[in-house]
Amino acid sequence: MGEVVRASLASVHVLKLVLPKGSLEKATFELFDAADLNVSRNSSVDYKAIIEDPRVDEVRILRPQEIPTYVAEGLFDIGITGRDWVEETGAQVESLGELKYSKATSKPVRVVVAVAGDSEVTSVADLPDGVRVTSEYPELTRRFFADRGVDADVRLSYGASEAKIPDIADCVVDITETGRALRAAGLKVIDTILTSYTEVVANPAAFADPEKRAAMDDIMTLLNGALDARGKVLLKVNVSAADRDAVLDVLPSAKSPTVNQLANGDYAIETVVEKRGINLLIPDLRAAGASDLLEIPITKIVK
Ligand SMILES: Nc1ncnc2c1ncn2[C@@H]1O[C@H](COP(=O)(O)OP(=O)(O)OP(=O)(O)O)[C@@H](O)[C@H]1O
Ligand SMILES: O=P(O)(O)OC[C@H]1O[C@H](OP(=O)(O)OP(=O)(O)O)[C@H](O)[C@@H]1O
Ligand SMILES: [Mg+2]
Image (cartoon, rainbow, N blue to C red; front, side, top):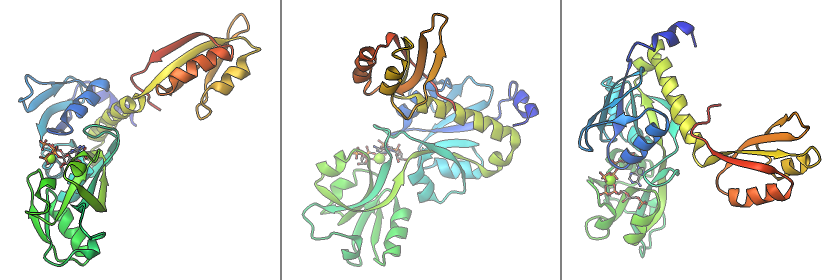
């Protein structure tokens, strides 16, 4: 990346950002905080916000359903939404990459086709023409049923879709994350239309502009750095030369630890490990001869 472009970022607020209100709002704000792109607003019903960063101009908070279209139209340079809404709207946007978080977990949501649990139907092909399908995703649903050769009666849903089976609709196309809503309604999944992560999308003209692109890349570096650090810690230990290999054997093999020799001939070893399992790892390291163990929280990993 050219020096000229980067130097200019210090003084120019180049990016208009749009962030999602609703399911992804809290998780998105937490991620931006962790990325040192703190989003501040006067109250939770203030839909204009500020990020104190030289690359960011204005920040709006809008429904994720509308975000791909506004970004495609150039009202915003970048936006965060779900892949589901990019597909549903068919908006012409550039993808800057997935961000692996949902409302409740780091797993993607799935857009699924579900019917009553006691139905004889086991696949979409079993559904008759005229089947009543309710969905917040009418376009995805129409395309999917047309592909399968079923002439479905697709009705737009504004939510609580699962609860409409069996009296108001025969079939639902809805997202599922933990499966809780489907279970509560006693439904069974007969097909998956799409797996959807949260995604950062950009306006194609903004993406082609070197200055805006440089700012986008910087923001993505920070967001990905914060996401990659989640659930990880830095572990530092000291060990004698005699026990060094035993300690290295205990450390997770996928990582390559940094090993430094100290003035007294001992070794200092440091490596990033998953926080999960550290309750087993620390006593094992100690038993292998490690001492002076430090477990240090980390907030970003940028490769
Ligand atoms: N568990 C989840 N439930 C709903 N949407 C989720 C979930 N996890 C991630 N998302 C993503 O959030 C976006 C939907 O956001 P939206 O604000 O419409 O959620 P919502 O749950 O419908 O909000 P509301 O509670 O206001 O209806 C989609 O892109 C979807 O993929
Ligand atoms: O698999 P789960 O973890 O249960 O998540 C999926 C549920 O979350 C969403 O509902 P939402 O909260 O948006 O309510 P809504 O249907 O009124 O929009 C979605 O429509 C499902 O009902
Ligand atoms: Mg909803």
